[in-house]
Image 1 (tube, rainbow, N blue to C red):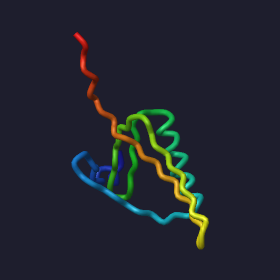
Image 2: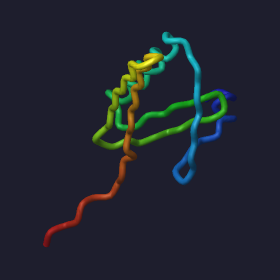
Image 3: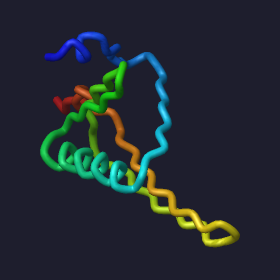
Amino acid sequence: MTDADDERSTIRSGRNFEETYRLDASEAGEFLIALGEQLRDDDELTIAGDDWELPFAFGEPVELEVEYEGVDEPELEIELELPGRTDESGPEIK
């Protein structure tokens, strides 16, 4: 663990958090590749900024939305929603 990791605040349940970045396409692509690898390989992921870290255990199903607005200035929006994983189990039949 580096000194920078020690100085990061961890975002936990019970708190709202939002951060917006403006990146070039290659940086966004690298982020999405790393995110995709975590989604593929595990059921938890961690996203970190300079001074924050957000660990998240996700569940199923994952929602993926693709929206294209082609009027005036064309825009493509890709949204991924990951539900939080719960440790609850269903009721028991006796």
